[in-house]
Amino acid sequence: MIVHGAVFDWTEPPGARQRRAERPAPHKERRTYHPRSPEKTFVSSKSHATLRYTAMRAGVFAGCLLVVAVLAYTGIIPEGIGRSNPLWIVLLALVVSAPLSFVLLRKQRDAMSEQLVDGVGRAKERLSANQSQEDGVA
Image 1 (cartoon, rainbow, N blue to C red):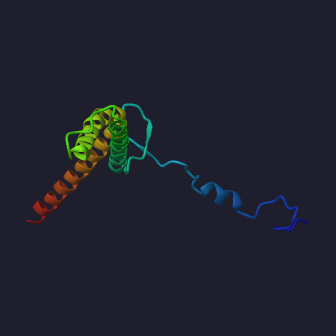
Image 2 (cartoon, rainbow, N blue to C red):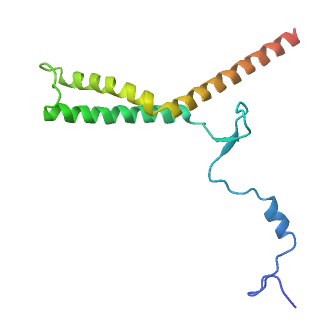
Image 3 (cartoon, helix red, strand yellow):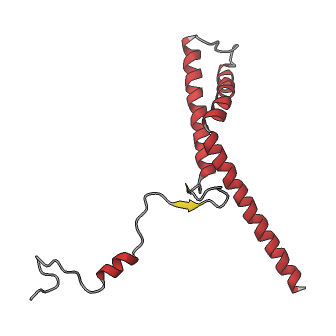
């Protein structure tokens, strides 16, 4: 006789297979269906695209600031006139980081703009729904 729970028992308790099939599979990455995509593909979640772009933009600026400061300290580029050294270094880092982030962060900027457009679209839908409810009451 085989008893459930025995050490060498290879049987499953009743309903175990069904419960295992009903359990959702663990996902490593949340994926959502993108409705405007021409083909039926899934894209990764863009819930924090603005935060990601801003952090990466700040990182590019910090890297440029570090490089410009080192170049000014070693004398490769001028340090500025008189006491304008910190302002000169920050402005030069801004000028250098702007085109770099424009080229390097294109995907993140597109994801951020898509997130903003979707948010504005949902806000407009809610506003029009609220206005139609007010019109229906009167």
